[in-house]
Length: 318
Image (cartoon, rainbow, N blue to C red):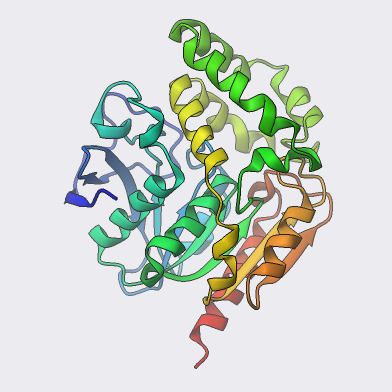
């Protein structure tokens, strides 16, 4: 895995190539050994316990909208963008995504480790959503010294395509879609991505059970605008990384306090997946939230915050 070369603590709040979607301006960066520039923000009291927010697939900061302002009161909070997302550069610092091998889950986890190392964080509680669950579990596999506890929300330990909607059909369809998008002209792919900003996006998202009728749609506004600026190949390469990664064999080795939170209306990560994951993690605590969808952190920030504080209490016990 590539290691950080340098950290720059004082960057302008915006620069060329920034895709937006920020709750906090990304005013810090770490430069990986392969040239990737991972940009992030840190807020909260200097001596407070560390929390790192691990976002989902192609997500900027919108899912932390109601959580981060509460956490920052008594935590040192790290909010970062995955490579190719938000303010972070594409892999290797290039203008275009160079290849799928640079967007694997272990590489994304290595980016998180680089940020924490640059900040001198000895250990942090990891709050993860969606793909961030895979990244957090990979961080545990690679750098368990950095992980003091985990709150795993609406995510899977292995390929989400194998369990989406409760069956594996998507796992067989994804390679076809992947090749089609990769082969399509960039301009055409970008037009398809921009469709998420159309008014029809909400009923479609409800129909495919990505969100629920009660999901705060204002919380999705920056996500939709940001997604239209993400390079389509970044999306495909990252999705390939999700499909290839499997942390199930390492679940039994987890020794830090862990909570798993899933919703009953999440088609992308069915509740049964969370139940199975929690059963395989020693002493993990599980909560299945009625009527919650894949946007659970936006719908029930109070539930997520309660579990984070519970994980910290358990970690503090002798």
